[in-house]
Amino acid sequence: MVVGVLALQGSFNEHIAVLKRLGVKGVEVRKPEQLLNVSSLIIPGGESTTMAKLAELHNLFPALREFVQMGKPVWGTCAGLIFLANRATGQKTGGQKLIGGLDCTVHRNFFGSQIQSFETELPIPQVVAEEGGPPSFRAVFIRAPAILDVGPDVEVLADIPLSAIETINSNPAIPKEEDSTESGKKVIVAVKQGNLLATAFHPELTADTRWHSYFLKMVPEIEEGTSDIVSTSTSN
Ligand code: GLN
Image (cartoon, rainbow, N blue to C red; front, side, top):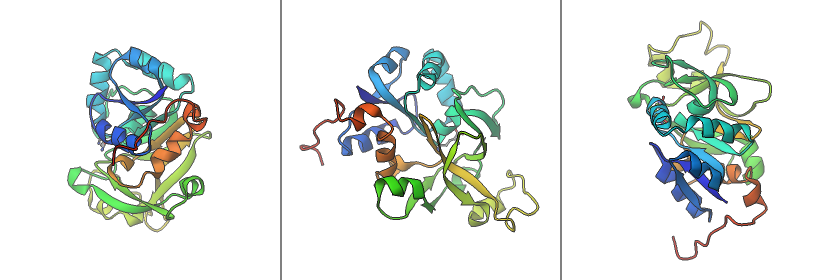
């Protein structure tokens, strides 16, 4: 068994490269039957409406939903998070098809447009508890979503105080709450719910592999070290 990476669109090559650095084989998934050969799945960042259209074209939705419902580990990053959410709101969301499974409401393009993309040091205590390393993670947000609410089974792994994000205040598209800065209101940007992991940012675009390692620990076959480890001795 190997880790599948949904390869319809977006940053799938970058995820496969990080997996390789960790000594794990990642394979591109474009067809429903390819999901039968992977133990787990990463859904990359990109553009979630385009991804949904391509998934529809390739008849992937039933197989993706079954994969999630079977309890196989699935990690959605950015557009992948939107794809996994039960509910999506925000600009241009009307009628967008989702895989669902993750009990949350996600707001597309929450932080603004492309030029309002940003990086920030994000405290990630649960991941640090598992993986060690520095207490925060340099998180890259590109036209990123944010999670507005979560159901009772969802564990919050990282959030950001709105007051820390300058672009929020200058972005007219984001509805302002009267006391959002005073009350220290936060939006959620990383969650775990059973077999599902989701991050609003892009760990595959950094040199820090802790989120990938964290996800791989959710994959039983890899944790047991049965068959997924490939040799990286010849690569650098
Ligand atoms: N804004 C994109 C969307 O709504 C997601 C951006 C990303 O994946 N970097 O699909």
